[in-house]
Every structure is written in structure tokens, then in C-alpha cells.
Length: 191
Image 1: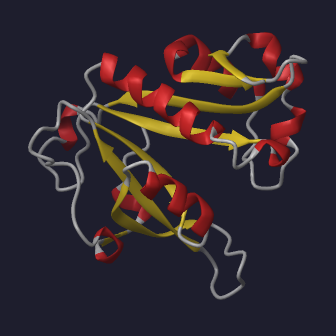
Image 2: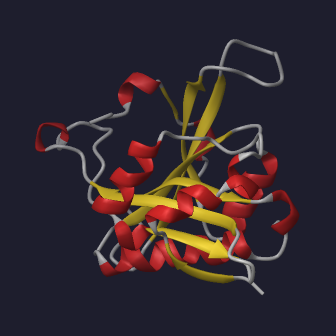
């Protein structure tokens, strides 16, 4: 049986099942600790009965700075999924959905307008998972990833996917046919 709980620093020593997977982005210890100290309610692990970390989600809430408020790419207070991973042998058991819903609840508590995430256009499994959870493509970030595993071009596009939360009653922060709304990576704020 697997249960969800808040991430703890010692979990960094038990993440081999997830972080040795080639689909998982790995970060340095400082990065994980920054998220733990700044957004502890948005960093959740799935743990099996033996104490192994079988999955985790790491997120944050943020807003673009005031000077971007009047640009077309301004982002209001929102949640962001930085990383979601489940160990290969624990996939298709509903852990990704449970972890994502835990992060969404945390973002609701912090009055976020929506939750967003970036996913490779070619990662059809992840795109399907997120669509099944109510996310839709808001825009395409052209050549966001510096590599393209298909070898067709130098980089791979990212889908900026979003799910509105209860604060966004008029659904202002989603759009239809977002796959066709193209932006360059330079249009994103990286503060």
C-alpha cells in the first residue's frame, strides 16, 4: 500500500526508484531544499509500506512582477507543477493523479487562479494524463526544450497546460486550440 505525505529532507536519500528513471528531471539538493522551505505544502511524496519513495510532486505558487502586468504574457497568482514523477513499477496505479490533486488542493488554499505545467509536446502519455485531469493546452512554447528526442529538429516544443481553479469562475486563464498559439521561450518570465 502506498500513502501520500509531505516531503522531508531525508527523503532525498530514498528517491532512487523515481530519480533513476530516464524520464525524470534531476535537480541538485539546493533546488529540492528551496522548494521544501518556500512551498512545503506543495511538495508531496508517495511512500510504499517499506519506506521507499515511489513518486513525488513538487510545485510552487507565483506571480509575474508588476512591470509585466500590462503585457500579453503576464501571469497572475497561480500554481505551477515543477516536477511530477512516479517510479516505473508504480505507474498506472493512480499515483500521478493523487499527487496532482494534492498539489491542486494546496493551490486552492492559497487562492491561485489556475495550475500550470510544461510538458514535452511529444510526451503523449503525459499530455493524455493531464488532459484526463482537466488540463488543457494554453499555448505552445516553441523549442522550449533544447533537445528533440525524435531528432527532427534542434529543440522540442513544450505545451503550457493549465487547469482553472475555483477562483477563475469566468475561465479567463484557459483557451481553446492552445496548441496553435505559439510563443517563444523569451516571452516567458524567468524570475
